[in-house]
Length: 96
Image (cartoon, rainbow, N blue to C red; front, side, top):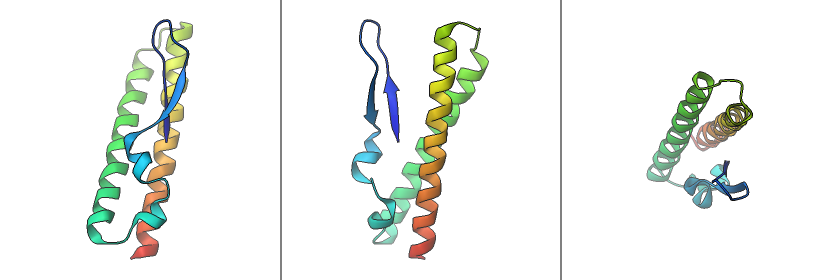
């Protein structure tokens, strides 16, 4: 639910994805069908984005420290996205 950003000359910093600002607890957010649909869409988009980043990191690995860092960051991001998608699905099932 966070991502680590790094820019040349700047320290790494961890920030929340935009959807996390609104939906820190998916179980409390599901109140009506529109909110549930929005929650599902946000989880799907984050998971897709994390999968794409992970795929790119796998195929761009060249053994350098930067590529290994990118791979580790992408793997952690995918783990977070998967965990969030599971929390969302659990919240939707309990609501249902």
